[in-house]
Every structure is written in C-alpha cells, then in structure tokens.
Image (cartoon, rainbow, N blue to C red):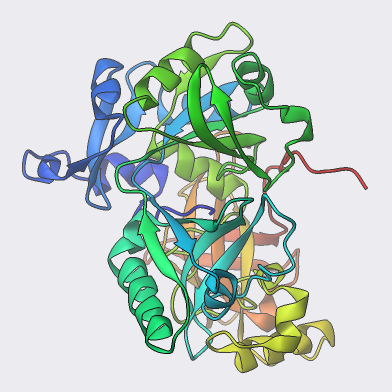
Length: 410
C-alpha cells in the first residue's frame, strides 16, 4: 500500500512535477500541516492536500538512505481511513475485494485490491479485521473520490436488500508512518504495547507516548520494518515531536520524494503508474493478494478472469501478454514512466516503463515496467527508448533492495 501515492512523480522529477504555487497551496491540510512548516517542509500540492515533498535538513537522496539506516517519519494522514461496520461487513468487503477476511485471524490485516468486472485493479488497500465491531480500511488519497462513493453506493445497495453494513470515515484523523530499522527501539520506549509480538500486518490499539487510542499497524510503504499509527488529530503533532526527541535512533522527518524512492527500491506498486483499472492482479505480479479460499468461492468483480489467469500461471501455460518486471539500467539517463521499451536487435516495441529513478541506496538507475511475457525472464537484455538515445536495461528480480518486514518465524 500499502498504501500507494497515485499521482506522485519519480524523485528526480518531483520538484518540477508538483506545484508549489499559491493557487495549488489552497488545497486541504492534514493535522500535521503546522508541524511541516515548523520543521522546514517544502509543501506541494498532492492529491488535493498540501504535503511535504522533503525537509530543509535532507535531500531526497539523503532522506531515502537515512530511512534504511535509522528512522523516518512520514505524514500519510491524507489517506482515507474508514471503518466498515455491521453484521454483514465481512461478506460485504469480500464482495468487492480479493481478500479472505473471513479467514483472517483477529487483529491482522492484508494488502488487497478492489477489482472491476474486467479483472482490472480499481485501487489497492489494506483491510484489517479488528477485535472490535468493525473492519479498518486504509485506501489511497488519490482515489478517495472514486473509492468512497463506491463503498457507499454498494453499502446502500446491500442495505436495500436487508443487509447490515455501514461506512464510517475517520475524517481528519492523523496517520503517521514510522519506518526504518530503529523503529521498534524508538517506539517501544513510549508505548505499553509489546512490539516484539506485533508482527507484520498485525494491528492493535494502545497508548503511545501518553496518547490513548492509537491504532498501531505493523506495515509501511518502504520495504523496511515499520508501523503506521492512526492517532487523534489533536495529538498527532505531539506524537511526532516525541518520536523526534528519541535518543534510541536517528529520527528524521521525510517527505513524498523519499517515500516514492523507497517504495520503488522495494518493488512496490504505485496506483496510477504500476497498476490501474486495465491491469489484473496476476499481470501486476500481485497474485498473492488473491486469497486461496477466494480462488474457489469467487464472488468478487472479475473473479473468473483473474482466477483463470492465476491457474494458468500455476500451470505455466501463461495466457496473458504482459508481465510486471524490474529493470536495472546502464549508467546515464534514468528510465521514466511511459518510456517505450524495445528489443535490442529489431527495435520492436516490447513494453513500457511505469516508474523509474536513480536508486539512492544502490547507486544505479532502476525501473518498474511491463513487457511482453516472452521478454520477462530475469537476465533479458532490452532497451529503453528515449527518442534520440537508447539505454540498455536488464530484467531483474524485485525488490531491488531486500525487504526487512518483521515477520513471524515459523
């Protein structure tokens, strides 16, 4: 996702691609807006909100590297947080997504996708099954205008059939991502929660630095160990300031630029770039989001097409034309979104780049792309076509930087 930033440009283009004009900065503000200004955040318009792209103390490159060595704090309060309530909440959400919510242990969550009747991805989300009377959802800021009406209209249709389901949005509530190898040491000193038993995609409510009713979910969008903390908006700035004061690790604020570089290094999809309503979960390499039970029960939009593709993948009889891959480029110009990919010999078009940037942590140019299935094998040599010039790329496995999620050892 989880948690995806649907309109964000790649880091090297970020300052040119996002507006800082007075008109642009008339957008909505998160509960941490004043804190961003206090700490020298460079504010830009993103998904209708004024958001920090970076801070005065670190470049995007240095902030990216810092996250993988220490701790970075990201404001993700612009994302849509909601509770799905009612006796039929599980069946309702399973009718819209590929998740096996019924089979989830209590207080765990999963990355999932909203799909359409053609099997395409309408958005990605995290859905958590809490020990309360609701499911907790986090969906993308850039898709609020379609996700919320979609949830509300479907819930109304269910209620018209006598079902019990309601949508409650957590308008204005803070959401703070704390990411990096030092996260657990920094957070544990200020919470009554046992972080050693809070594994990846687990969620729990507790007190953090004296602030009650914080929902802490072990997840993130960087590939590092981390949490996202849902917090009372009146207390969000206090939470962040207390985290910044920690002596357990080097803690810094980070913005959209570093977050995009980090997710790309981790091979994570950005909605609107790497996944969209014309790309299925299987084509996008997200078959793991199609829960085993749901492959049998179906019942979500586009289920037949998606499950057929997944079965073909298992049988190695691939019946779709494109596949999402990682690319490492030769030195020079970094591949960017929409750049064509061609075969080295006949220059025939074989795909296109969806995201790309110079990797701060690898010192190489990297990209995510879709290519013809026949050209998706690791080690395949291709060319990114910039028009007058072409750059060689090699298909590689993702993530580019190994992920460090805190998973339960079996």
